[in-house]
Image (cartoon, rainbow, N blue to C red; front, top):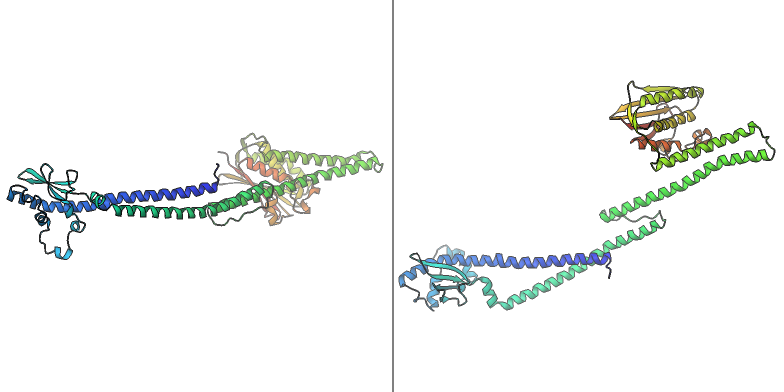
Length: 458
């Protein structure tokens, strides 16, 4: 039978509690045997040390043990503590209070019992009685463990039964707590599993309650972040498909209208009638090229050949090429490049594409009579290339969205200016492929500032 996680968790907690109880019981038994009973035996051995001198003196006086053989009264007289004024204040010795004296016995040199506890033998705790350098007998003490086993079996059995009862009740309580704990934890796990199934079925609006700030709460928060990301991606995908269809439909609709006008004889078949068709074809071709480049940069399939490049030389060459176009558009082109080399490690063609897109944007969207300024500076081992233009500006809340596909801000930066809405998205992917970044801010000139951050070559 396959056990579920609920049963596994319950059995794990229950087994842990049972093992802890068992180990605790064994440890308590060993501790009682070795510590407490050992302490009592040590007290008896200390008492034996105080009695040994008397036994030795008595043996010298009588020349043997016959005077003690079987005489318990004389034996207990020898065992009696010597008079001590301090003893009246502290009470009898611990050994007397724990019954050590009745466990004492005297054995002769052959371990034959003379007097005392009949259970004493050569296996008992022994101390030699030495007279004139010769062992004449042994003082023996029956261990406390043996005395208990011999005389209090019923007490031991009662304690054992009580221990089993306590252990059983403890395991029952542990089982109840384990069931409650597993039920509480697994309820949240089952909730996450159910939410995961709904998310996999396409319900991206699904969210779960994070609850407490434990590991399961962290997992729930991660799940909500995943659901939010999937919902955003699905919404972006739908918008992207709608934008693509719209962008493709517009030039195709113009081309169809122009062709139908020529077919119906409304317009003659002349170069002037074909010019709008050519413009729409060029716009459609540009859109398809941008979509192709964007798809390649998104999956990192665009080919890059990284090699040492001087940004100053690259920017100067591009600005020199585009300067006549800026002048023709009535725009003043400024440079803000410090003298010296700007070494980077990158693909020259892709960086030209990146900077070319940005310069085309400034040329296309800046009002006539405005200013465009290109600058580059070194800061903390990185190069910051900035493209500033004069009005129109972009609202601050729209700046973070400029690098989204097909995003346009307002009529001043729209499709009629010739843009596909994909150029900045391609620029972002190219910058990231060079371990860099790109961002948009308000320009000091009153328009838009685009900053490209690239690492300096080693």
